[in-house]
Amino acid sequence: MHFDQPMFKNDELKDKVIVVTGGGSGLGESMTRYFLQLGAKVVITSRKLEKLDKSAEKLRAETGGEVLTVACDVRDYEAVENLMAESLNTFGKVDALVNNAAGNFISPTERLSANAFDTIIDIVLKGSKNCTLAFGKHWIKQKQSVATVLNIVTTYAWTGSGYVVPSAAAKAGVLAMTRSLAVEWAKYGIRMNAIAPGPFPTKGAWDRLLPGDLKEKFDIKKKVPLKRVGEHQELANLAAYLLSDYSAYINGEVITIDGGEWLQGAGEFNMLEQVPKELWDMLEAMIRSQKEKS
Ligand code: HXC
Ligand code: NAP
Image (cartoon, rainbow, N blue to C red; front, top):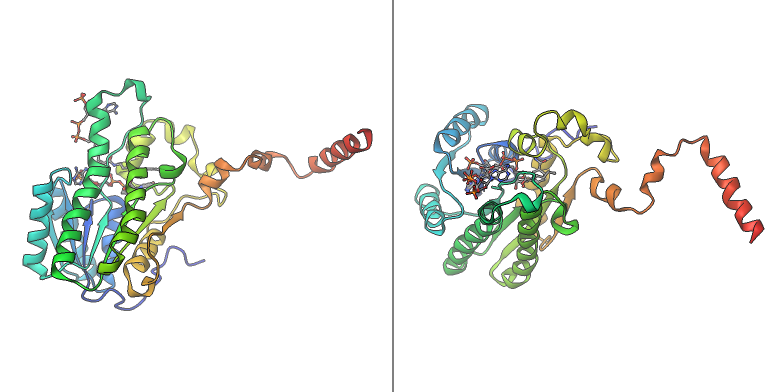
């Protein structure tokens, strides 16, 4: 099994300029590393410049690639316009945007202040909207023939989920925006796709979603039919494919990468997985005997 290995081996993203929001940590950093290995130039952005610079230094040393860091709170449209201006000043163009920045924490919804709810909606939905609108307007004005937006959502964008309701509502909005603009902006050569990851260990997500001993209490692997969490490289492989020219006919799609996790939760009788093999003879006999009686 090679799922933790780089899928592309050459310069499949050579000379592409990619902006990754939240690119200085977690999955954003892992995607950035792989894009650099494939020859892309990457702009990483988030609120904390010091964190971004540290990450960029590490990534340059590891890959020899070109990384620009720009501090930007994606909730602020002017800051996003500045991000775009700095990216264009340095690299002359932008080919792709990855809306990866997010905020989230677990809480019963009735405990949330209005501001707490807004904070998550603003980072995830308004932030993705700000970046998509700013870069989209630029690409359309420039008549750039090819551009790509990749939105990182979650599987509860369509199932919903208790205890992360602002995040679920915001990610559902991002998914609707993905599918809507995939059609509306296709005529400008802009492709829009999304990835819905299942559990991928990162400090940012896991410390907020499984704090303290919750990590031990809820063994996340048991929720996944494949009985493991995701490897960052396999998500980076998918992201690189969706930004590459090889996926040129994929538009408006959301690709789930979760080992089957959400379907395990959704399938009516999937709990029967817990029935031991030896019990099935007895269960079958019981069901058949019901048929004979009726
Ligand atoms: C209730 C909370 C809270 C908590 C903050 N607030 N934490 N309310 N429970 N645990 C409230 C605050 O009291 C405040 O409301 C409001 O939220 C804003 O908080 P601030 O700290 O001022 O906001 P800010 O500094 O902007 O920080 C944003 C943040 C923080 C979202 C709260 O956690 C953050 O910076 N996160 C970024 C990284 C992240 O979340 N990564 C995880 C992504 S995982 P009041 O009313 O008091 O002013 C993900 C999906 C994973 O998205 C899916 C896994 C399968
Ligand atoms: P993470 O490391 O916490 O990533 C979140 C990033 O967003 C951070 O780099 C953070 O940087 C940035 N950010 C937060 N608020 C911002 C703002 N207002 N403006 C700009 N940047 C901001 O967590 P992660 O696990 O890698 O998550 C990455 C993406 O994957 C998210 O979209 C998340 O919803 C999605 N996802 C993750 C999982 C998982 O299991 N890990 C599962 C499903 C979906 P600063 O703090 O420096 O701003």
